[in-house]
Length: 187
Ligand SMILES: [Mg+2]
Image (tube, rainbow, N blue to C red; front, side, top):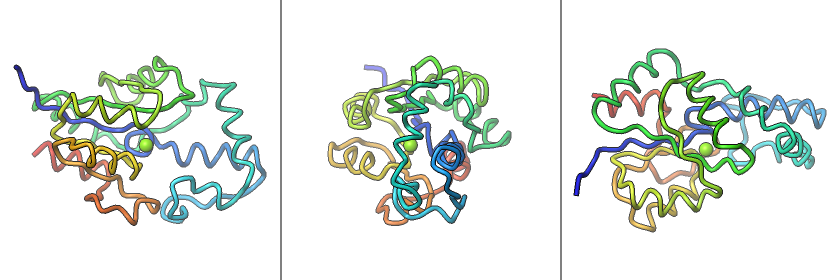
């Protein structure tokens, strides 16, 4: 059977800056101020440290799926050029579990901000496990520790890399920024 080299990336928190955009929305909907960048609390749902009303932001997203188009990319021009170089070494795939975002919006976002990289949408992060068992990636990068733990437990081969955020401080997986990760694998 043909074995292709695959480099797989999560979308939010890895390629798309969900965090700042969601913080903007929480600030608007809940009337709080949320510090940015390295000041995020070290928990995955960091906004819960600032407001018990985060559901108001999620309600807005549920009604306005075009909100996802506002996200900015976490990588710059050099990284995008490196991603294209990586595509010459193997297949680059994005796998996302945005349950509230229609798959075509995630794909259009990718084309608008980064370029023609396929986006696979699954309903729940646990659905990434059978998919990645099948894909046998050389690399999978995510910012959600439970996903990486589930992949490791299931025996997904290849390198499991954790995106470097305050909420991934406790990761036992190698942490790096998306820029660093792309640079490392394109070499
Ligand atoms: Mg993510």
